[in-house]
Length: 265
Image (cartoon, rainbow, N blue to C red; front, side, top):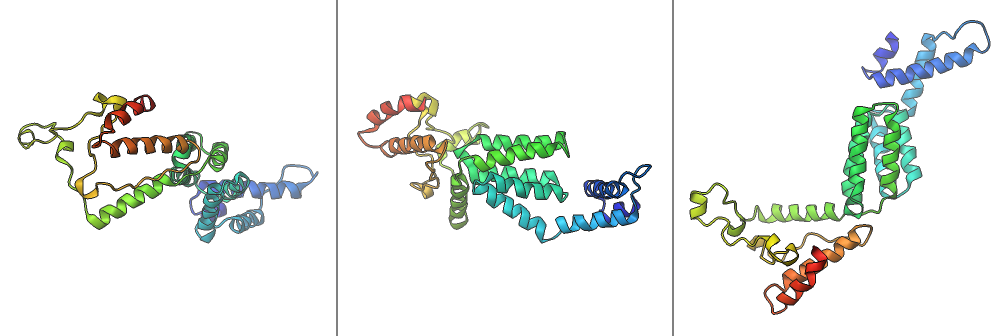
């Protein structure tokens, strides 16, 4: 036990897993002889060596395996996703690390093509905290399968990247006066902060046609949705909203607004 504790670097999961391997070695050697198996130092050394060969948590295999899991899951191969997940679990990887990567992938690679993917990943992370190993491995497996089979979209990821690129290039935009906070009153009220704001819920379809972008970014479009999964419907909705807003200053405003009322309710 002292040897396993020292070699595991304080990682109780690794030490326990190695002890299980050592016990299995001893049990297999004992055969049908009398008495129970005795776990020797040689068994412990062999178990630790096998663990090191199986998965090097502190080296390249740690990064390579999680990278492979991400790519397999993004590529919609649940069998490969499960294999790399099993490799990490058998190697003593921290399940919280795996759960964090699942949450990230749910937004980066699934996104609004299936919004439930984020719920599933977050639920798996909660299960890891509340259940722990070994049982939480089943929660991680369930999430891995769901994420692998979910329709994929990186539209939100790309849209945020485009918006951040704009800010880096142009700086923080000036907030339009009608969109500034007037909650505190006083000087803000005297400056007209918030004056002229068009409250969307007072409009047909709860859609304001007022310019909401700062002047410097007027006309910029960062979001381009896919036609996969739930994003297909969102894409149609986005296109209709943009048509209405683009025609807000034309004679088509009333007609477009009326036609959108039922779609946006």
